[in-house]
Figure 1 (cartoon, helix red, strand yellow):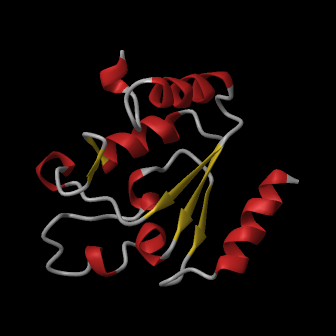
Figure 2: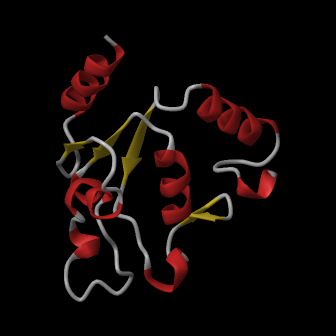
Length: 121
C-alpha cells in the first residue's frame, strides 16, 4: 500500500493518505507547475512518483483544485512548442473538478492568500 502513496514514505505518507480518505470531497488540492506527460511523466518525479500520478491521485477525491502560477494554470513556458516533455496545464488534465487558476510568474502572494482564505472561510 505504501508504494501507491503520494509524498514521502512512512508515517508522513500514511498521514497524507489517511487525511485524503477522511476528508474526501472536502479538501483543496493545490498544484504548482506544468505537468509533464511524455514517457510516462518521468521528467518530474517527487518521492519516486511522477507529477501526473501524484496529481491524479490527490485530485481524485479533492473538492476543488487551485492551480498556482502560469505553468499550472495554462502550461506556461514548459508547454510552449516544441514542448519536449509534453507538459500540460492542470485544466488540460483534470476536467471533472472546479479549478481556480492563479496565474503569474511568479504568482502574486496576496492573490494566493486571498484565494486560500476564500476557501477557508
